[in-house]
Image (tube, rainbow, N blue to C red; front, side, top):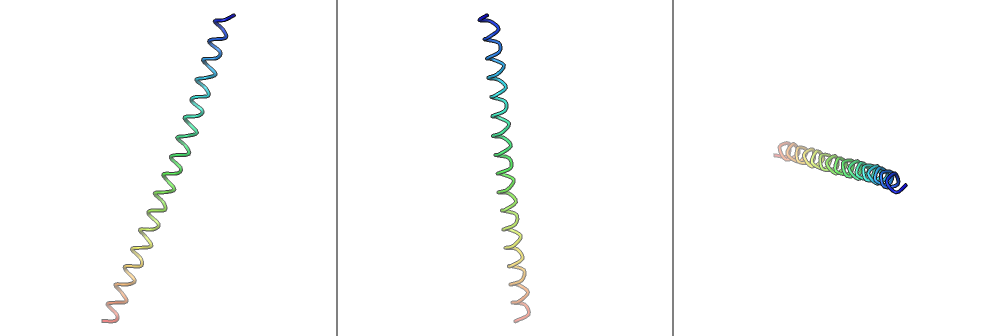
Length: 61
């Protein structure tokens, strides 16, 4: 009876480990994607502000 228990426990541990790894990878990937999106949004807003500032300065001059 000891051998089957060892196999079952090994399978359970492997399954839990895989689930845990998948959860961590999905959370980290979504987190990095969110950060990248935020950076792109910030860069886009900054570029728009710079362009507006250049247009205003050109009109003023």
